[in-house]
Length: 102
Image (cartoon, rainbow, N blue to C red; front, side):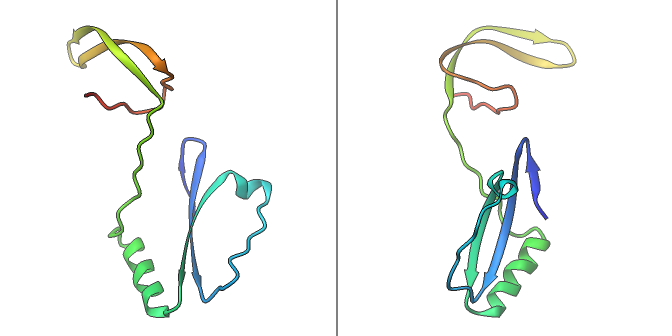
């Protein structure tokens, strides 16, 4: 079952003894991020599916630098915490993105 992150949908595909690996992508499949893993031993496939279902497999986390910002002023707001007022100096920063402060 695909999981959604924003507009992107991630789908894991497990294959057993499929030497071709040929897929014809439809319009719906082009909007998916497909992750393939091919197995030649059925027991490894079953173990990975059990681990995935039990939540033991770690998620794939990747970072991409899209922009840089400089902190102009720091505001302390009651019941919220500290907020940094920033100005983008390079690239872009989208609203749903998370940031890393160095």
